[in-house]
Structures are given as C-alpha cells and as structure tokens.
Length: 82
Image (cartoon, rainbow, N blue to C red):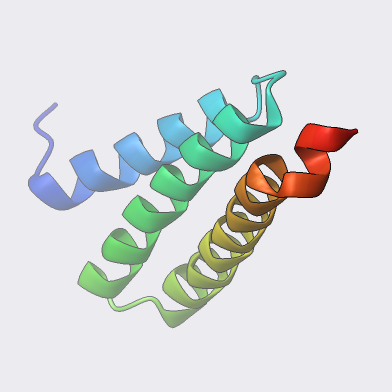
C-alpha cells in the first residue's frame, strides 16, 4: 500500500480531529480540532472538493472565535478580581 502526499494529509487531518474529540480540556480540543480542520481545508482544496474545504473552514473559524473569546475572558481585569 503506497500513500501519496494527498492521502497523507487526509489521514493526518482525520487523526487530528479524532484525537481532538478525546480531549477533556476544551482549549486543547479546540486547538487540535483547528489543526485537523485546517488540514482538511488543504486536503479539500487539493482534491477540489468544495464541501470538504468550506465546511472545515467554517469549523476552523468557529474554533478560532471561541479560542480568542476564552483567552480574552481569561486575561480581562474582571476575571482577576472575581
């Protein structure tokens, strides 16, 4: 069985998403899921599959949104005083 680079990217993306779903820590989950989704975007673009890359681009954007929101809440002065 010989894998080409495109298949390797697809398998790496699948593995990253699967690993992310096993995380208890939400930050780790979102970071690993973002990496997996980003790899799927690359994979989808390479194989010219717009449903693959558009959905994963959306999910990656959602992950970034919530990561930024979590880090902003964590570093806000109100969070320190609570």
